[in-house]
Amino acid sequence: MDIKNADFTSIFNVASLQNRHLVDLHWFTLAICVLIAFVVTGLLIAVIAKFRTPENDDGSEPRQIQGNIRLEIIWTAIPLLIVTVLGVLTAIVMLVVNPPVGNKQPDVVVIGHQWWWEYRYPKLGVTTANEFYLPVGKNTLFEFRSADVVHSFWVIAFGQKMDAIPGHPTNMWVHPIKTGKFLGTCSEYCGAQHGLMRIIANVVPQEEFDTWIEKQRAVPEQPTDPAAVRGKELFNSATCVECHRVAGNEDAQALIGPDLTHIAQRETLGTGVLANNTENLKKWMQNPQTFKPGVNMPKMRLTDEEAQDIAVYLESLK
Ligand code: CUA
Image (cartoon, rainbow, N blue to C red; front, side):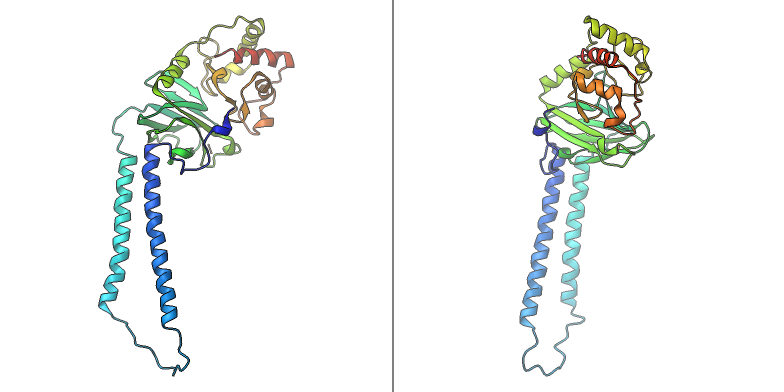
């Protein structure tokens, strides 16, 4: 997986219009804070220098300024003004970043599961898992749901986090402004493998997005390679089909685990845990607990040959 060129380092590597507004507000707030720090520190130093005890100090009290109306008004008005400006700007940014959704239909529905992500594009009839695509330059409405506990969706360069709460859908707008691979992670503790509940967001030009959608909608060809044919039979007779769906394979229509229709197109396995290749897939099936202790996928008790055949079948699902 080309994770080296992926961005997961900083919210300041701004990849969405929404994050642009958030980061701009951040810098503005920081500038005011720095200004206050300079003014206060400067005044403090000036006062220390000017009013230090003179050598011939007679111990008498200096002139008192208690009850100075003008000073009282100034040091009440300035903080009030700063807090008001920041409050109004924050409210404006919140409205711009999260405008009311009304009854708009989401473009992407993200469902948090222990410990993977399901992505549905209801308008386009696509369901996939763990890695998803967005077109650049288009405001996309997300809806978040959870199949079990509270998760939180956070692609770092998109700025915002949003909780996925069981029984209470939430929304977020993302308007990507640059192409690339942006990484994220679940950011609400959700159990043993919270730390390995990774997100891979691919932002691509519209044409590339359309091609990806086309590929996702296509039903994969039936296997012809003998190993893949054997693999499919094993896959259908083992417990795999109790949890997984593969379009075009009538025995595999369960929606408990990730949809495997186009698993061969993905870069990673186990939600970003392993690079996706036949060898790793085989190891993963034989003992997923080694790579992700607590994962809901059971150890499959497959012989080497069986695991190999199923892996060949799954890797044929392009
Ligand atoms: Cu899902 Cu933390």
